[in-house]
Length: 115
Picture 1 (cartoon, rainbow, N blue to C red):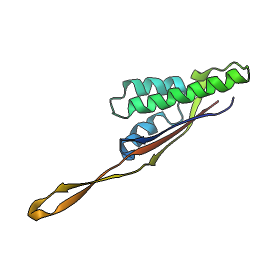
Picture 2: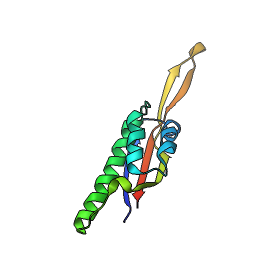
Picture 3: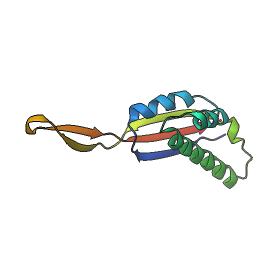
């Protein structure tokens, strides 16, 4: 079976929070990863599920082009990488006329499934 990739960029959730959920599905089968993401109550779980479904669709499309049969539920999440995206820089007023910086972080998600 071939590998299939999917990615999502500039997700408005900090990478540290996304990695907590990504570590749970790394190395799992696609069916198990779907179940984990469905019942995880973190804000990044729907985003990761959508990226996983995109990778599954990419695998099915590649198999259809080659006229092969493929069982996507048996495929494994071989690689999931959470990178740091662009930071939005904001300032919050503080005491004595100062301004304190706030960095709103974003994430890039790279997911690969394979047999």
